[in-house]
Amino acid sequence: MAKEAGLDLVEIAPSSRPPVCRIMDYSRYKYEQSKKEKLARKKQKNIELKEIKLKPKIGEHDYQFKLRHAQRFLKKGDRVKITLTFRGREIVHPDLGRKILERFSRDIAPIGEILKEPTKEGRFLIMIIGLKQGSVAENKHPLPETKEKSEG
Image 1 (cartoon, rainbow, N blue to C red):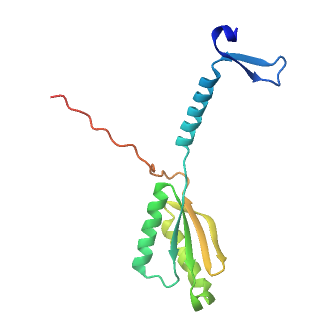
Image 2: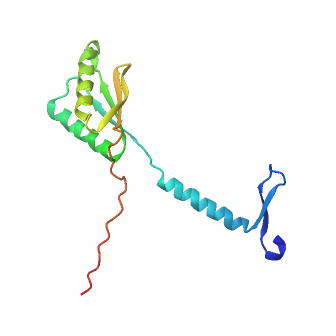
Image 3: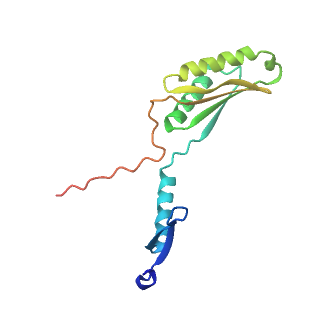
């Protein structure tokens, strides 16, 4: 029947009794499957990890600047890795770094939540923040707005 129709006989479920077969155009089926997979990948959300670097002796303006950047990254839907670097003798005062990271987490609390608590790795204190559950992230690639033509 498949040869008469110019199509392929495709085995759908070989393990069932009796095996299930279908008469179809196999190349077209594969093409449609690849289209579906491509569309699924397109709709998949890609979360990036952005990094913000701080130091224990950060000034107030610099701190606010970094905080605004972190908020912007979170609103886009990305995660933010806060890296606090100790230089020289600063490493003997990890409490100063922890205070800065605690303040950062308090200030970003309305839109972000801590995914990974601050951990000391060598001369770095690292904390990861993600978008708070229930907050809506902006679309990374918003669709362009279309202008309606006025008939005149």
